[in-house]
Amino acid sequence: MTLKSHPALSNRLPVWRARLVVILFFAGFISLAARALYCQSINKEFLQSQAEQRSDRRVELIASRGVIKDRNSQPLAISTSVDSVYAVPSEIDLDQLSEEKINALTEILKVSEKTLKQKLSQRDRDFVYLKRQLPPNQAKKAINLGIGGIALETEYKRYYPEAEIFAQLIGYTSLDHKGQEGLERAFQESLSGTSGSRSVVRDNKGRIVEQTELIREVENGEDVILSIDKRLQFLAYRELQQAAIEHKAKSASVVVLNAQTGEVLALANYPSFNPNNRATFDFSRTRNKAIVDVYEPGSTLKPITIAAALDSHAVKEDSVIDIESGFMRIGRRTISDSHPDESLLTVSQIIKKSSNVGSAKIALSMEPEKFWNVLSGVGFGESPESQFPGEASGVLRNFLSWKPIEQATISYGHGVSVSLLQLARAYTIFSNKGEIAPISFIKVDSTPVRRRVISEQTAQAVLKMLETVTEEGGTGTRARIAGYRVAGKTGTAHKLVGGKYSANQYVSSFVGLAPVSDPSVIVAVMIDEPSAGKYYGSEVAAPVFKNVMEGALRILKIPGDSKVLQEAKSSQDRGNG
Image (tube, rainbow, N blue to C red):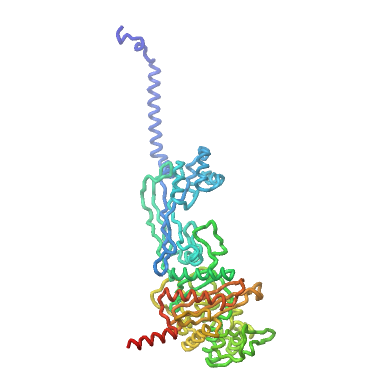
């Protein structure tokens, strides 16, 4: 049997069936061609947009926030690169995800299953964060699960190397890198920079497979150089913390200024908080009490009163005031001294012994307007314009509404409220020959423009009086520093509670400057509600001042000027000659 005669080859396909196959083949070809034509021309834009939605993305290029540095370029706030896990819910079929993967993802991201499913079920959204700012190894675990539509985005997290020590001063940022408090907020515009953007192509797992067009260049934030000296801040915070704990105080604050320029060299509060740990944030501790809270300054205001009286010629340096054994009645009110030991005091002795009666009598000898002008001139009742968010203006009522008793009590710091920063700044009139310096948190390279408040002669006279406070017989002997002439003033004020002065709650303070021969540093200390037994400013605040000032003078290498030191130096010079 030949090949042609094989039975299988002898069966022919019916003509109609062959034609049907050919027709179906050509129909299929034509339909495919028509579909291709439809997709590439008629419905091109819609399909292209759908493809781009699934693959082409516009990725935001996050600007790196500027570094905040101290005056010696030591970093106080920096930005570190972190990963955030996000999802494209429109590309995820939640029903197709296994429980195993869902459980693994919730464990890695530390979120509840309910929260995760709620985010992934938003099918109308193309972007949703699942967890932000994760450590790289943790974020990588989430991606390694291989869930399509879940990817990583690089962000920056703010980190504060010194944590609690600078917390209320530097502040902190939100997850979106916006300053929320402190200097982070004050300099938000310069620190933040401008984000950029780039077009990218992603695969079905959300991974970037191709970077295409750069749409907008990223502009990183500018660095900010503060006036703060990290070394002084450490010192100030340590001393403040020890004192607050020792005296069981509610809170405590300290301000350290450059006495000539008004630059803030250190500013600390206790208790503080750790800005690096958001989980343990105690927002009651985020307030910078030295700047945004006010208190009645007590006797630390007396030097301002004496300066106003001398400048208005109401009294002279050698004037003698009868303090009437430490008691004085004005209407129904009685003003008294804590330690009356003499009836006649000079103006200088009123400062040295901190006489309320003497201060009140001097204040009442002035015209109210002239007294008010000096108080206003040193910045009381108005913002110090330091740029710090929420800085307090304090309270200084207009002199036209003063009654005699109010003019008297204001003279020793009752009936007027200030922030500790305002009070420290007020003392710059004694270090700058009667001129007040502007406050600055930014390092300055030249002497700023100052404004005259009192005469140079008055400023020098009060500075000498303030030096007697730390000498034998004064209220501030615990503020003395070996090798230096120190000037300052103690303050002890009853706290206002519910509109009335508390009998057993106090604010203890000390403000001073050194060295007297050429004032370089001003330190102001405030201890709120010391409750361990001692409460006088001389006992509670003066030792903190001494330790902070002594350390500052040493760190800044400011030479001593005490009379003993000067005599020894003079003797050495004569010997060398």
